Image 1: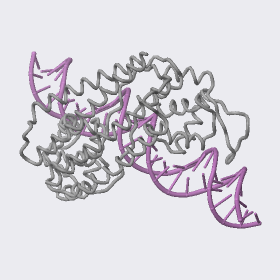
Image 2: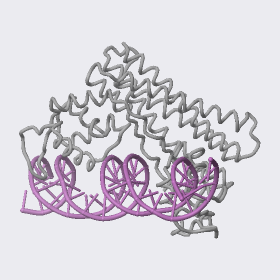
Image 3: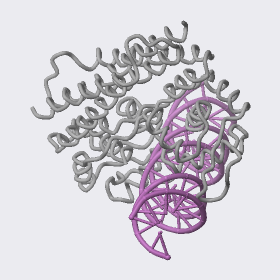
Image 4: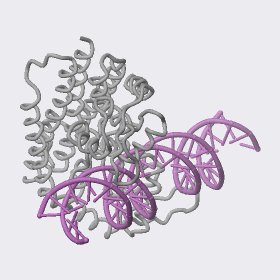
Length: 175
Length: 175
DNA sequence: TAGAGCATGTAAATGGTTACATGATTGT
DNA sequence: ACAATCATGTAACCATTTACATGCTCTA
């Protein structure tokens, strides 16, 4: 239930409505756990039914902003969940499946696909580096700041790794 | 439809029945696209309905081995699919969601979770390194061998990266 | 010939994706 | 008062996970 808890975290940070939440989400933790507005509205309804979030008394009805805040029960639940032990979810990477097929089949058209993927990794890396430049420095002071920087570093290093990998794959496919 | 094409690749490599396929799968490309036997049997039925695989004439009925081979149509389909351009599937990493919650909530119990994850990454890395030792050398000769080694290297480097990351996370959480 | 384990399956639940629908607000 | 856009949804679909069911084969 990562999506539920990611949303709960966002609402602990600051109360807001679904649309704003979607927006904030897709600019922060959404890099590691993306979600569309449909998923988010569905999850908000579930969270509310669980009593983990509460609507702020503003307005109701379709088309009207409905803001929510995390309830005390929601905060406890989030603390519990953070400490929960769970096996990591399995990796699933389509590029590896294609590369393996290319290994078995012999010469194929995979090059352009890898080039595209290389380009998206480069774009994502640039984006992350810009975020790092803007929000962090070498001397993060608070624990919160350090942890948030670490999360972004995970993204940066992972993108860098995939860029390197794609380049090696291209070299091999070109042979 | 990565699963379908991963299975198709395995059946191009060698014909076999569902159970053996499950086994082979989980020792090779399954590291990058895991699947249970339930998924595999369902997908075999779909692949057969599409005409991309054909049953070998041995036996039928529940409990009896049913071996399949890739059909010519299946091979063409696989070639087409390898060249297909598709956006990479989004990253989803629960650990990042937990770390972010830990950043927002303040001190929490996340340490043990990260330690466990570190341990599984170390175990996986050891396993991959053993596979590398057994199946590959620095001087892979064929294109097929080079590509298969590259795929394994992706796993090795990715695991090494996450080990490093978990260690840095632990250092931060311990402060 | 009974039991262990292999091989093939069914069913329900979960979660994510895609397409579409509708009410409210804002700017012209 | 109309169009554009914002905000909130509904519905159908697809893939994955988990739990369970059943037939077959081999060996003690």
